[in-house]
Length: 502
Image (tube, rainbow, N blue to C red; front, side, top):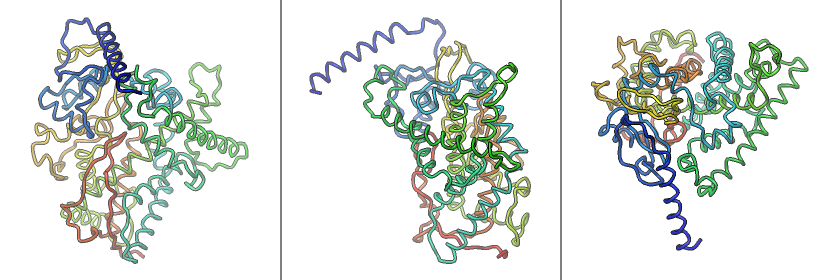
């Protein structure tokens, strides 16, 4: 395309944007929340930078905890304080229970037919009920405890051998592998070798979901596919569909042959809901795309979130030898040195729980949560919030708010939770790693169990040294923004086994 043609195209697009925004400009007399001036077409997208949660925190310091910006031509409300978060996620939760539709959610999740991106309504409630009662409820979590114990035991033995050979271990990879193995067994009922290629394609899907897609914010640019994302999405969605079909078909064959044991995996549960009596109006049967959509939601969430949380927490422990020592002393007192940590020990590990809370405060897995969308026009705290506004709760900013965390706000300091009953379940809006309200994370309890158990084993079973005489304070803690917020660089360390148990 010649420069003159490109210039004409840009002028034309600006003109179209002007017409669209002029016609669609809200006529409501109430004031929108304060916010920075926006540019034609791109709105405030140029202000987000590579780490949007940090950029939005700086803007909120100027414009307040309820701030309006434009992401392209999409109105967005940025929430940056516990009080404001409570208004959106509790007081008026019913009006913000929708998810915005994006190109990725429509393409990869079968037109948002899973749970994560589906509209709020009967189907979403049914899908959430299936997930919470058949995978993440306390009884199911307990039923799968032996499988978690087995997989984490294999991790400990692998690290013990590496320590005996003075090997440098990629902690990020090791944690990712054990979380992957646990979830394969709980969700799919098999080992990762049974589903070769699944992790790689899920990781690619996660990367695309977290990528900035201009078509989501300036829809009329979508057909041009300037970023090539549409082509990538179609390719990935086809591969995902083929793998999910293979998984479902294998389970259907095994069910017919009666090969499953007493604990059904999650795929079996979804398939049993697909076979519900269609004449029973009290039940909502799932079609094939629902089964695949929900299954994909669970795989994407489980592969990524627990791994990110464990890596960040362990990195902070390596950076703070004092905290590592305190945690090891608690484990030695509660568990002893002649056995490994069991899940039944977790409620008694008070300092471990404080460490995990502090890590979630500083390093929430999803710093802006998953966006919500307003169902109807509403006025909150004197501000007009238009229908179809995108609501983004900056929990990263809330975790660093000096008005909330007055003591050592930027420091990793678990003792701030001493004699403090603040929990992680969405009741205390100062700490919202799993969100809150109707759209709070249904896998919270399973995630917490996995995070705490893996961390306890790593700290209890081993002493750790950083490579190449690296000082703890020099450990790279750079973030990488996406669907989640992982550590940019892999975490490396040398283990030394410390238990008397052989």
